[in-house]
Length: 111
Length: 115
Image (cartoon, chains in turn green, cyan):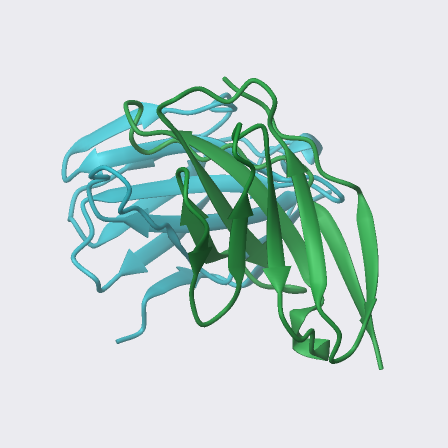
């Protein structure tokens, strides 16, 4: 399975944009890039996903490099509630269900 | 619409005791999953089910059994608990994955301690 590499932790100030990087140099053409986040003491929740084009939704934006070997999750204005562990996950569309959670990036947001 | 619920929220077991964790979803999802999360780690898949009456092994299935007798429920059993099974257990569910459209919905977790 293709792997992802994320920084262990990042810090941001409240109300500033946050760019969370993810490297996936062995990504295959059938891998979708999914992002989930896990707030303290809660189960993970879906954030966003994409294949080749940049994606926007109400929670975040996903910027995907042209060669697809890296991507960046963008939180446009971090709030204290965005403090969480963010997981970048590759999902092969042919294998269907599998989500392989790594250790993710722990985001600290300071007032 | 409660989503995914898990029972119990907390449990302490002695080594060798047995217990069952219950997961219920009200979204009519076909797929259900059980994960465990150890401190400072990501989630690891224990077992999953692609429909009523079917189950399959995930990444770390040893020491656990599962059953899916009803579509909305997925049970995780520990027949003889060991301290290594101290963890937080998460249940999740999803529709049948179709192309890009895919999202797993997670429950709040069960914190299990085995002494």
